[in-house]
Image (cartoon, rainbow, N blue to C red; front, side, top):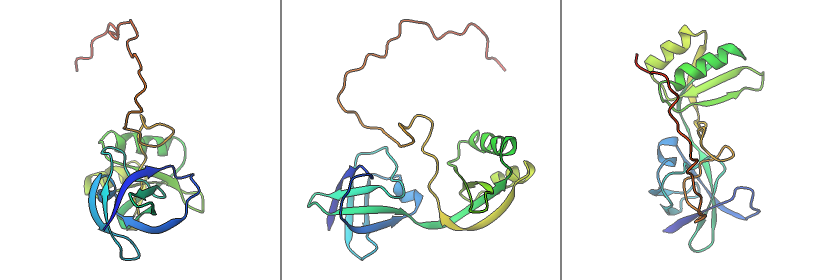
Length: 176
């Protein structure tokens, strides 16, 4: 079994030995047994936290490099107009703490993609979206606190003092 132990920068020029196609549900795990697209048994032994993104590179303890691919899986894609309609849809779906992928197709139609869920689908239609249920890669947005659009959950050992010496009390009541 090939032991994949290290994430390497996707911009690194490396010879890719094989690819590993996984659905989102498995790309969020740091420990996993899987089979590459060429039939090689692999084990992931990675730091926990960062999600494996489509195109990420993993290096085995023996030196081989494997490229991660997002698998086609059941998704709902909500098509909606640009601007305020797209903003509203993203806000209301995101407010339900669901992972979302956001993009545009070749014709310039904007879309929001999420795992199938009848409640979210009803909300999207109420907000003016048209829906498509199909198989596609699901590679959701990485989140507001990800560095440069990428998850980044490990320490580099730099000491940083985050004490700012000011109060975060905004002086108004949030009672509802």
